[in-house]
Length: 79
Image 1 (tube, rainbow, N blue to C red):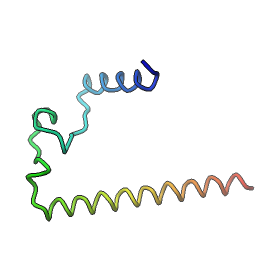
Image 2 (cartoon, rainbow, N blue to C red):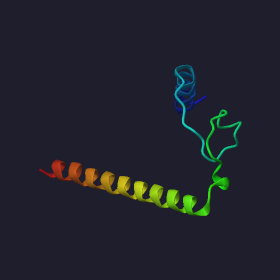
Image 3 (cartoon, rainbow, N blue to C red):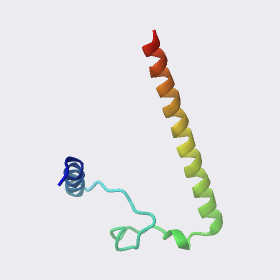
Image 4 (tube, helix red, strand yellow):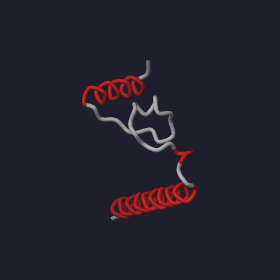
């Protein structure tokens, strides 16, 4: 087993013991651990569209911040 896989397995075990987990929005109710969350395909198309747009905006803003941080670090190394 690789180091990365071992680390992931240990993190999963720790998360289970601590009760920390991330909800799988796209999985079946059994996969979601019985959490009473809506199933993606059951959401109205307007809600799906709004969520996709919000997640896209979030990812683009995150990428932009990461790119800005990289430029700042590279600029500081030039001096």
